[in-house]
Length: 113
Length: 115
Image (cartoon, rainbow over all chains, first blue to last red; front, side):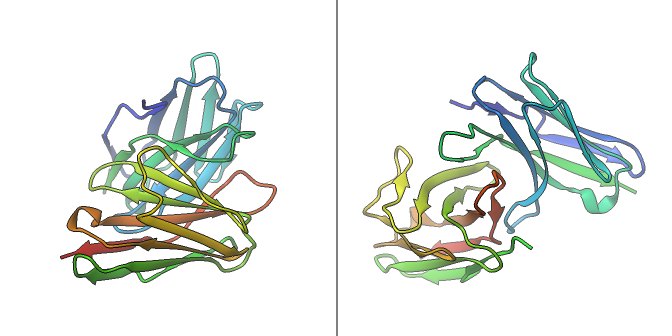
């Protein structure tokens, strides 16, 4: 049962524009959310996270928004760069339940020049 | 900071042999380490959670006698794939969690090919 869903398997954006990657979850017990970036044949790289007590967290070009009532979060990358092309995974944690990450299936982002 | 290494990065073995993969947290102590498996074009599947000094907790459907996990120190966890078969061929990734934070930091992964 997929509790974290990334319904867009792929996204293509022009360099300089905004990339918006979406993630939905079903388990209301999730209270911490993370975004990871992954290149082929490499391990995921941590990008940014957000606690459920916040609705926005920003780090440079990356901003994560959390809408708890809609059980939805999104990652905004602005401006997008060709080096951002990768697979982005959304993950969620129940913080008092072993810290195991529940991953979405990922969205493949392609930033074109 | 928060660097995790894995060794080897790629291993090819014959069916029936055992393979050991090491996961090390290089600049922090990790009370908890995780082992994942990724099939082509799919998400990461959690195999097991290991806590230093105790037995690993395996996810449903993961054979604990086939995938032996040892977390003998705060910076090292090992995954041994015993009597490997071609269907065990996959990309295995470990992660480590520093104390007091939720974030897991991932190793670069190990590509296992069983002939």
